[in-house]
Image (cartoon, rainbow, N blue to C red; front, side, top):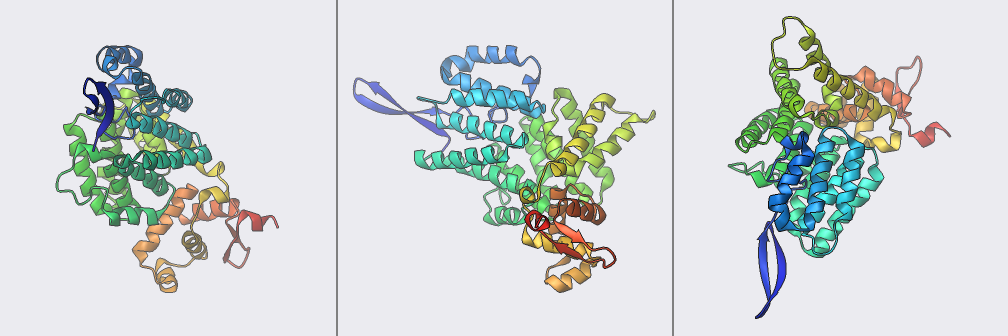
Length: 399
């Protein structure tokens, strides 16, 4: 149910009136039923014009909506301090008779800004608080998108089990005959879950359907995100040419609006690919609409982000599972996938899925890089001469 109830007094007493929702239960106003990508330019003027229409109807709650939109656009541009500032302002406007969906969007935007600023503890507390308020107020229609947000975070942190659980639960629309706009945020979590579990053929098919949905509703920001995921899935299927084409289309959309955060969020996957794209754009024979300066900026920013995610992270924050630690040790020992499979009774495809997730957490692209970074972080000790690796935690390392 995407409606908000209001109690209005009339001559006959109290009457329940249902009014249409502004956000339609989406977690972010700038990416709700109204896509605000064009607000990337002249945002102040466009928000002023919008106030003269919907703002007059919404009333005081429009200030929260306006700050949510500002925070969202700044977030997509990678301007995280401004995104945080406006998210805080949006939350400060959430009081009194504000629709619960507006409150939901304000706090979700604040949590996203905090995660992007590496304030994970504060963001986790906000997400837990959102869940608690939804239950207390009986707004269960907001739970699917909140769950999609939480699972997406866990997938990005390398939690393969969360991805499997999301797909098995079936709430992400993977069995829908026709994709619908109101579930689009959940669909993106499903696409990431397919990729995380190694189901890349399913991911490619699903994301292609998602792109059609995004384009039919003229949602450039969502189209860009879908193309990024398509590029990742295609590359994992060794379809490099198709992956390059999808990434180039995503960058072409991004440069029109100055959006960068989606690429930085996938920096572990995209940094090297963006480097190759930059090299290609630099060639005199390149013919296309890509701007060299923007592609260079994206590449350098993604490379910095990929390095920072590991250098700024300690062992506890990496949140590697026991299974991932075990497989890293076996891989560093020089075992083949077949030998690891025999020892652990896991399928080779499952082993690769766990290791991909571990590599992403470590910011590594191969076993040599994973070994070096794992040793530097104190996750394993590589004994000289023996060739075997022992797992240790930071605490054990300093004993």
